[in-house]
Length: 102
Image 1 (tube, rainbow, N blue to C red):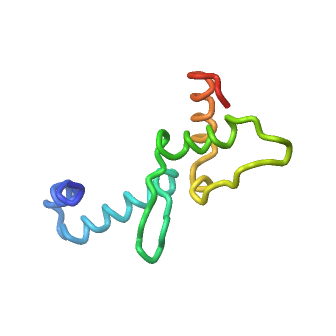
Image 2 (tube, rainbow, N blue to C red):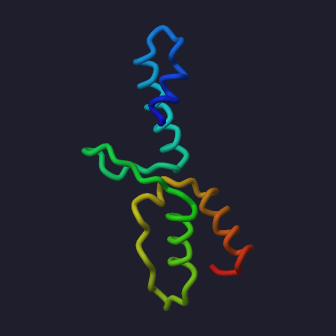
């Protein structure tokens, strides 16, 4: 589906194939910079979609939602460093406001 959208978008440009590839690369780069995608495996060119509901929220609930003894913590997953701090803080606030946990 994405390939057909990209092809339609660049069909009338001078170099449609090159522009479609460029569109893909720039889209993935922008999503990676925004913390929406995180490179999982460089060799396989595999990315993790860092969604709020399936990735960030479960991590935050697990990390901050329970009663942890002093000194006990869970390690940060590899992808959390790629997510902007403001996004994590916003999601934390959202969780607190919706159900009071964290």
